[in-house]
Length: 290
Image 1 (cartoon, rainbow, N blue to C red):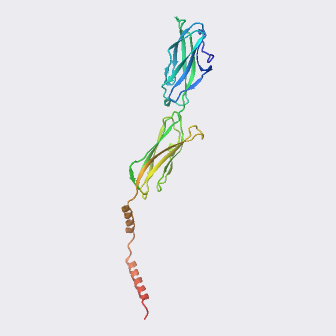
Image 2 (image 1 turned 60 degrees about the vertical axis):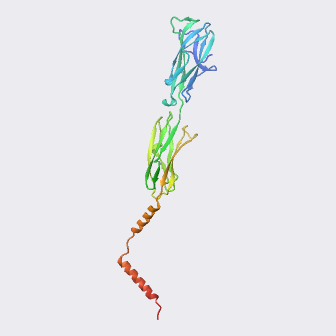
């Protein structure tokens, strides 16, 4: 087949282990996001007699290998066997990292007769690469329930890198739809580089205005992700939490008004006397002349 030149030793005799497809060598493969790969292995026998090959595999990324332990190949023929890599937790390894898969074959018999001293071996390798998983999650946690106007509340914002490569969120911003509680806060502490599995949180304190009416306020957090490290693809994460604000009651407003009235200074005796004198003078001036 001429896929990959075998690692021939002086004892090697006209057979080879090869990794490839449709007559072309495969030098590298990428695992699926499920941590699996199917590797096409070919045993090529150019001898006129059959040979039995014992197979051994080296597993990359702590994988489980499923493949035959031995195979018999007739003379002047080749056999394809599919070796399966599975059980790799791709989130436990950095995206883009590479390790080798190797299959080694050793002749144990020829034409059904055991080889007295096994040592006729050949091997083939392929580079297995780890896929890059880019995934970030955004969570918000508010006070819950109801609060009164004039109180202080806090909201917890958490960003988590659930992928296996570094990620950088941009413009992490907290806003509110309330008329009197307008917010436009950039959470600079969360706007930074995240390693795989890294979690960052920010506790934001918010003062609710005393005159805030009764309403449901929606506190929203937004973060922008560029997964391709350029502006070609933009992903926006959004999370929100609702807060029920109880506005001031009428009695509280009356108390505020009476408080203002009570705080005014009382008129002085001199001011009262002048007022009475002015009133009497006006009455005298208005009397008709005789």
